[in-house]
Image (cartoon, rainbow, N blue to C red; front, side, top):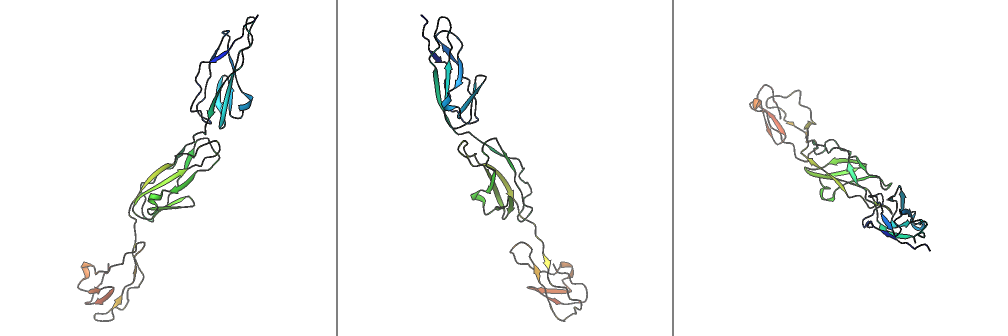
Amino acid sequence: VKGDQTITFTSTAPTTAKVAGATYTPTATSTSGGAVTFTIDSSSTGVCSINAGVVSFINVGTCIVDGDQAGNANWNAATQGPQSFTVGKGVQTVTFSSIAPTTAVVAGATYTPTATKTAGTANTITFSVDSTTNTVCSITSGAVSFLTVGTCKVNADVAGDSKYEAATTAQQSITVNKGSQTISFASNAPNGAKVGGRTYTVVASPGLSTGAVTLAVDSSTTSKCSVSAMVVTFLAVGDCVLN
């Protein structure tokens, strides 16, 4: 009479199986010594698959691997030996593919960050300014603008879904330096300036800053004119140069 045999798994079921994560190669022995074949139990074909003896994880749930031994002239086919384990959500990552600017200045050129992600969810990468630096920079329609001197931190994120965890936030830091500004005269220099004649009130725009424009007579022409606040008085014949 043929003997009955059992199957014993010699490989330890993974405790950290994740969707699209590291594969698992089961091993087992049979009482007869015959080779054990492995299949995925019909109840978990949506969770895992096996190819050439290697188990891959395709969805969250319970993966059941069945071990079989067909028997021979002396041994009956083995009672199917299952091994089950939990498959958790997969890990996805996001990485900046654009280089943070090294010449960022207040009110200067904007920066449009780009990033890539590993295979995972169909969700797109989103960019935001970290809440700790939202006074230094802002982002609109994907473009980062620089508002004040300091460190600007841009975050890249990918949301999770039923199969994948949300990606760990990737962060890029940018040093923002002082911006350049210009002063523009909004008043026209008088054509008929005369010694002791009508004064000239200068109007000038301070460019991008909120500071007030200050006016001075250039040191080379202090004998020709003087200035009080923004009003110029003409003292002697010659050129009056205003800074």
